[in-house]
Length: 241
Image (cartoon, rainbow, N blue to C red):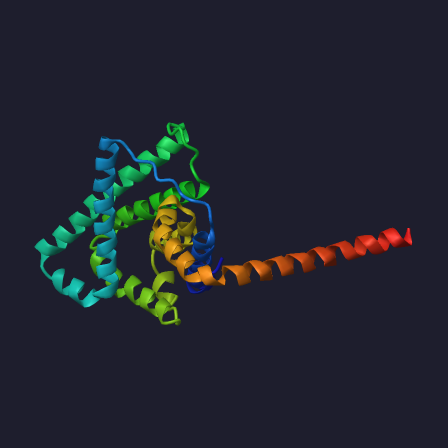
C-alpha cells in the first residue's frame, strides 16, 4: 500500500468510520451495564486513567503548542524532564495494557469480552509500544515530532495532507501514525465509548422523542414496500407454474 493511501486517504476514512460508528452506537437501544470493580482494581484503574490522561494531554500540547514545546526544550534539564515523564507514563500504560491483554488471553474474566475491546486494546498496545520505542531509539522525540508530525496532523485537519513529512520517517513512526487511525475506527465499538455515549443517548432520545411516531410510520411503510417487492417475483412464478 502506497504512502499516499496510508497517510492521505486512510486518516479521512478513519474519521468517517468514527463518525458513522458513533452514530450507530448512539442510536443503539442496547444498554451497557457497568460492573463495579473491587477496591484494589478501582485504585489501579484510577492510576492508569490519570497516566493515560496525562499522556494524551502531552500529545495534545505537542499538536497545539509546538513553539512552546521547542522553547521548553531549549533547556536540557526541562527536555530530560519531559522525555522522562513521557517514558514513565507510557511504561505504566503499557503495563496496564499488557496486563489486560494477558487477562483476556488467559480467560481470567468471568464476563464475555467484547471483540471491540480486544482489538482496541491490541492496537493501543502497539501504539504505546511504538511510542516508547521512538522515545528510546530516536532521542528527543518531543523536539523532532513538533517539526514533522505536528505539521502533518495540521495539514490533515486543513484537508491538505503533507504526506512527505511522514513518508520520510522511520517505520516505527509511520506505524505509530497508522495505529492512531486504526484506533479511531475501533473506538466507537469499545465498552468505554459505549459508557461515554450513554448521556448522549439520553439527550438524543429526549430531543427526538416527538419525531418517534413519524419515524416508526415511515419505517413500517418502507418495510412493507420492500416485502411487497420481494414477494412479487415469487407470486408471478407461482401463477405461471
